[in-house]
Amino acid sequence: MSSHRLDVPTLYALLDAQRAERGLSWTRLGVLVGTTKNVFARMSQGAAPDAHTLLSLLLWLEWSPELVLLARPAGVRS
Image 1 (cartoon, rainbow, N blue to C red):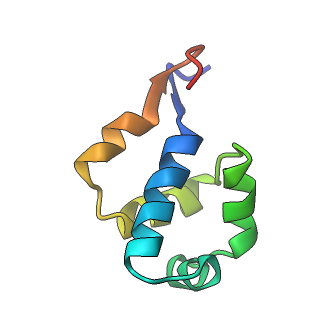
Image 2 (spheres, rainbow, N blue to C red):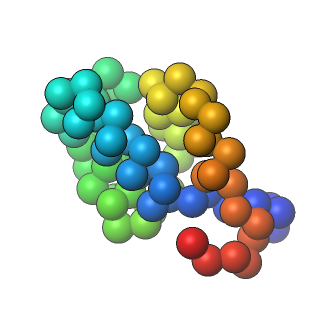
């Protein structure tokens, strides 16, 4: 088992803020990162994206310093 877990709600909030700031719909963001808006709907309910989608999303966020907030020790709830 991994020693850390992805904090999906925080990632979703970061994506939503950047998406809104850039004037994008979830559908358009999906096109830009090579996924669908369904991924974002699942993330809004706490489901983690697959590794490749996660990488694309992190790159789209430009690896901002806040990304360290996404790592949570396993067993710690957000």
